Amino acid sequence: MALKPCKVCGTLNSSEEEICLSCGYPTKGRKRPAIFQIAAIILVLAFSVPLIITLINLIQTQQEPQIPSSTQSLAKSSKLG
Ligand SMILES: [Zn+2]
Image (cartoon, rainbow, N blue to C red; front, side, top):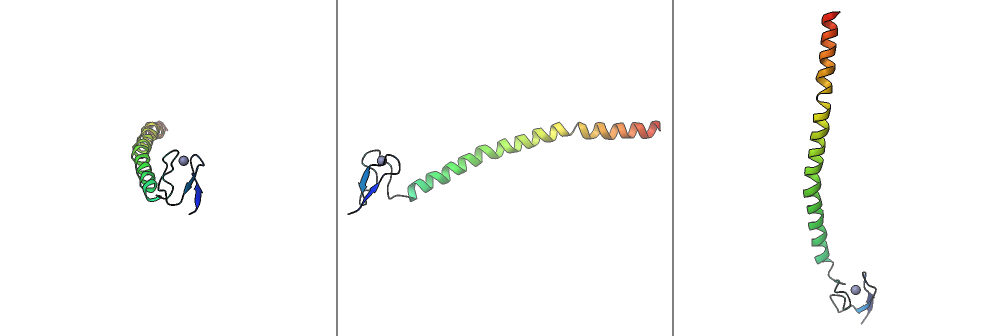
């Protein structure tokens, strides 16, 4: 029977215990936190991807007026010249 310190609170729990007796954090069950980590990553992606897309759209909309104006100025200068 081995004692393992809890990752969260440091309480020594027996290796037979699945969760920490002090704080309830799963000591063995790495499968359960992995699911939560994957869910957290999916949530972060679900929120970050639309943000990145909107940022790219904003940057493109900000850059769009500059390109026609430069081409128009070039066209006008060519017509005038
Ligand atoms: Zn604990």
